[in-house]
Each structure stands twice: as structure tokens, then as C-alpha cells.
Image (tube, rainbow, N blue to C red; front, side):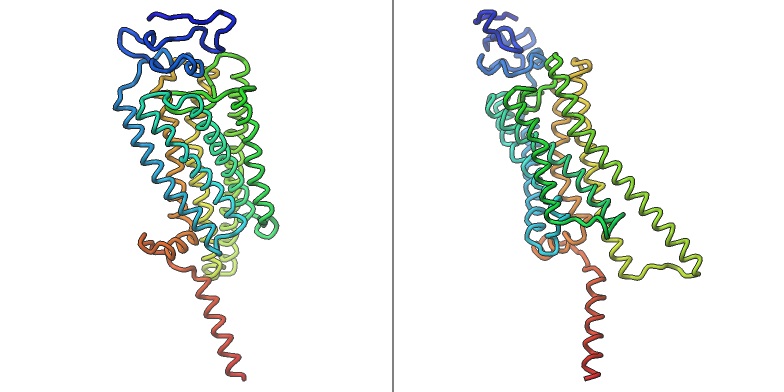
Length: 386
């Protein structure tokens, strides 16, 4: 392959020392990645990707169709969650502000996919550095935002189940958490946009963008280690701690109830109302645990990939391999709202009222009928006495 140097050594780019004309981006086997990228844009692409063959057109089109499917499913599912949780009075609780924020993060994560889809149909870095920066900014805010939101949801579930009287969430506290989440992500975004520490670059087939984890220098390795710790390790540690505490509390509480019932020679100490209430709380906790597990499952490959790129054997990161974690991150944004649809009883009830054509069959909680019966009995007694 022949290279053409069009700049003096003093004017060389930070990661590519020569400007590669399109006709020079060829090999004996065919075109290399970035073969048609203009010289003024190619400097934004890590050199690691420029050594690989351009993938078949069919792979680009397959990924574009997959992302179209992800986008439709996520926008519909998360749109319904945002709408129902915001509109239904019974769901406008402080705790559910965090649920709405998680759905918003998932919704916005898929709002940037038109950039990927367009690049895929154009088979490369079609929207250039501007599209890459937009993709990276939205991806960073939504990715870090989702991880921090999952951690706060775990904290809230922990308080509701283990300290129901002391750890009550308020609207002010929930809003402060949301503000903190986006402030938490902002330094990483600003650092990459200004390229003062890290940067947003294309990856894989050059159709998606993320923070730079391939440039071989101390600053890049420090940035990757820092963002990995604060956006993945810290939220994951919080999630594991709080849900392990929830599981331990539930098991110890159930054991205490069984032991007490045995001493009193009764089958159970729970009334029907208590059973319904506890079941609803446990179902909501299960939904939250499932979503946090999906977060861990989807973002772990991306975290491992970035660590390999910064500290390990870069030859393991081929363009095709790096597109797999990108897909898993988008997939979880599609699944999250349907986990709530399956596991959140009040959400299912409200969705059933507003969208009867979905054929959801959720029974109203027994607490409502019990309260209604009690009210009717009291009214009857008052009428009789009068």
C-alpha cells in the first residue's frame, strides 16, 4: 500500500502522521476501512481500525436493519413508560421519578441511532466528526445516566423494603438525584468534546462512536480507568450491595414470621391485605433487580472491551467483535420497558386502562376491594344507627 505525505512533520496529526488519500487506502485483498474518508476527517479515526479490511455491504445493511428494529421497539416501549408514569396519578410518586428518568435515558439512547443507521447505509464514516461528536455526547449522557439511575433505584428499593418508615423518598430528594446524575456525567462529556482529556472517536465499522480507548498513551489509559470506575464499578457495587441487603432482609423477615407463627400455632401471621402489599413491593423489587441485571449484562462487554483496548492486547479487538458490545447496549434499552410491563402491577393496571387493545389482564389489588368493603360496612352501620 502506498502512502502520500502532504504535510510537513510539524503539521502532522496527533494520531496519524501522514494524510492518506482515498486511492492509497487499498490492499491486495481489497479496500481498507476508511478508504473513502476525506483527508481532513481521517485524523479523527484511531489508526487501529485503518489496518482492517472493509466489511461486506451485507453486514452494514444487517446492522442498520437491527438498529431500526431496536429503535422502534425502544421508542415505543420507553415512550409508553414515560407517558403512563407521568400521566397516571397513582404512579406519580417520588420513587417513580427515577423510573421515568431511566426510561428517558433509554429513549434518548436510541434517538441517536439515525446517525448509525445513515452511516451503515453509506457504509462508513459518512457523517464525519460532527455526527461522531453528537453520537458520543448523547451516548455518554444516557449510558452514564442509566448506570447512576439504576444505582439510585436500588438505593430507593432498599429504603422502601428495609426501612419503610425512615427512608421515605420525597419529590425534592428524587429531583436532586436526577440533577446529580447529569452533573455526574458532564465532566466526562466536556472533557471528550474539548479533547482536553479523552475524545470521541469512531469504532468498529466506523459507523458508531465512543470515547477513545485505543490511543497508546498515559492520558488515554488514565481516562479509560477513571470512566470505567465511576460509570461502571461504582454503580455496580451500589446495586450489588443494596439488592443483597434487600434479599437478606426479605429472607430474615420471612423466617421471623414463620418462627412466630409456629410458636403461636397458626398457619400465618399475615392478613390478606399485608400479603397483597408485600407481594406488590416484592414484584417491583424483582423488576428493578431484573433491569439492573440487564444493565450489568449489557454494559460489561463494553467495559471489558475498553479495558482491553487501553491496557491489553489490541489485536483482539477486530471491527466485528467491537460491534457486539455496541449492540448489547442498545438491546437493553429495548428490554427495560417490557420488564416493567411484566413486573410492575400498577403500571400494568394503568396501561390496561389507557391501551385496552394491548389485552393486558391485570387484576386490581385486593387492598382496594377490602377498603371499599370496609367503607360500605361503616356507612351501613351509620345509616342503621341513624
